[in-house]
Length: 113
Length: 110
Image (tube, rainbow over the protein chains, first blue to last red):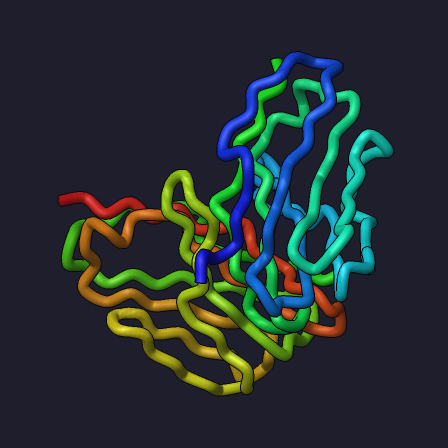
C-alpha cells in the first residue's frame, strides 16, 4: 500500500492567491482528516469526513478554508484567499474508523508570502 | 472539549539512556495512542492501547494505559540517535475523533 498521498509536498504562494491541497487516502479507509501543524498550536484538527461526508468542520479557522471529498479516494483543502498566517504544514490522515489509529501523509508545507 | 497535557515539552538525553514521557487528560479516554514524527514527515503510529492497565511493548518502546484512564506514558529504553523526533500522545474519549497532545521533542546526543 502506498499510504496516504498528499500533494504538493511544498507550496509557496503570494498572499491573496488560492491554494489547493490534495489528498488520496488509503484504499478502504472510510475516515479522512485534515490537520494543520504549527510551532505555536501543534496539531490542529481542521475537518474530518466519514464515508465522504463532512462530520465536523468546527476546526476550520475561517470561511477562507473549505474542504471537499467528492469520492472515497480523493479530498481537497482549499484556502482562498491565502494569508501569511496560513503558513503551516497541512497533514491529511485516514483510518478505517474514526476511533482507530490514523495513518498520516507526509504533509504539505505551505508558505504564504 | 477534551484536553491533553503532554510532558515534557522537550528532552535532551545521552545515547543509551532511557526516556520517559507522559500524557494526562481532563477526561476519561477509551483509547491511547503514541506517535512519532520524523523531520519533514507525518506522525507514524508506534503503539495503540485499548484497555485500562494495558502495558504494550514495541521493541525498545513500552507504553501503558493508566488505570484511571486519564493518563498514559511512553518509555524508550537504551536510546539511539534515530529515536530523535517529536513524540505525540493521542487519545479518544467521548468524542469520535482523536485528541493529540502538544508533543515531546526528543534529542539524543552522541
